[in-house]
Length: 363
Picture (cartoon, rainbow, N blue to C red):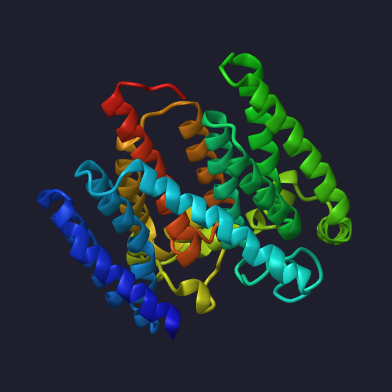
């Protein structure tokens, strides 16, 4: 289909841009990808072709990070270019949710009755994208309190209120709290502008709650129903929409399997073929790619982080992304979520590169 063609084109383009990566590193990436695919094909399962397709999805965001890091360090892409990409995404994405809502068309978040996704079908993926936009816009407002980013933040918060996922709402609440916290403890020039931003965002949220009251009420009722259907379960069970309840069964089936399964998993596409599917990326990656696959992928992502200067907002970015990937899933080898995660890390790498060159390391 069109999605797979698009994915293959992106993969080829990234591969052609490997010349911007150090030769030794590029060789390692190619070998790891080739071995990963080879193992997924050799697994004793009938869905090996689907495994390879998901292998492409899994590695495209990783390749994207390394390629963009090379382009940044070679001055072929500037920090302002990454900013423009994020600005465009932060503008287009909420409109593809809000406009369909106004015309009463599009997908629902929960069972076709609560929440609203606009043109998007994958709830967790668009929730991660919008959450990432909110995080990005709050950091931009912390650096530059202007109308442009205030407008974009209000748009994205409105989209979060429409979507109604617990994770996105939590990100909005946490980001606004941290912005206010930074405003209180850190005296900076432009404090009056930041105070105006805080008041404007609070007013916008209150107005959004009133404007989307029916939608939010239906989301609340859906949450309440889910809680009533699972009495005696933990709050973490509720926050993860029951995903933690699937871990024990999947863990048992995975570790009761052969040594091959423990090392290399039951295939990346196993969740589509009756294998337990937790919808928490780190667990799903363990079960589908085994301990060997999980270690390789985590090593590659951790290696990417070495280029990021840790400060207040970068630590918040990475922590929130980790929690969202852990609790909500549909990021590491999902098309939309994976690309957004790669862009998020690329933004932090680019920002760190600029700060290192100019000798500034403030958060």
